[in-house]
Length: 177
Image (cartoon, rainbow, N blue to C red; front, side, top):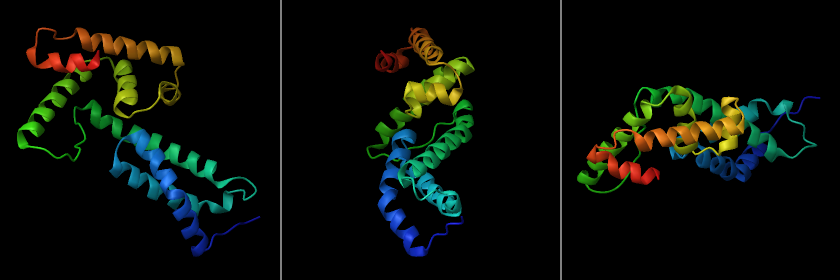
């Protein structure tokens, strides 16, 4: 049976569920800009595939699955930027001096992170940068939870031990303890 959706129905669905979808995307990506994009794409896909939706089932879990799949896809696409040492820019208030110091600290931290093995780096980025829980990071990487935990522990240990004599990295290492 083919179910189509009217403009009024789509508007009502969007108004009811958009804050929920946006919240999920924001919590996982930690980026308002990405959350906006993912929210829009979620509803575009949902409305284009509405004929596949079973109206006897709740709508929210279906939208949740579309949102999670888009978040994961977006994180995979953007992960290469992090691996090449490019840190996404966040809008922030404050003095020019504080922004410069923050950017310098972030650059030093990402230099340390880029020294990690790819497997350790992936887990660290997904858990601390993307904000995924360990079990989601493990599922995304298709590894066991215990493996994910051990890689994260090893990555943190390596970060704590590397360049201990460098004065500028002391504050970063304190934050990791």
